[in-house]
Length: 120
Image (tube, rainbow, N blue to C red; front, side, top):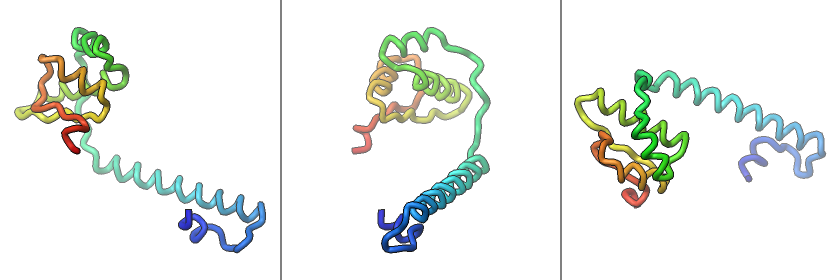
């Protein structure tokens, strides 16, 4: 909170108008920062080909094991990605339902399935 006061509030006892302007200035800076980081991410991200196959049987299994959208789609995308590679990547999730559900399905092609307990 001190950072906000140090950076945006220039008076010891700000008026409503000057405090409102400080908040607006802060929001403007945050907006610019967000767009800057978004642009940086877009320049550095390596996007893969989209998944075409729906894997309906695997999706049903996931949903029965309490893995819901969008987590089920993320799992299927990762599975599909691994099917097209010479090496298998790990699947990592800190969502306990997702981790438990994915771990119970043997058909998935992952090197390993890791959850938050693997990183404590």
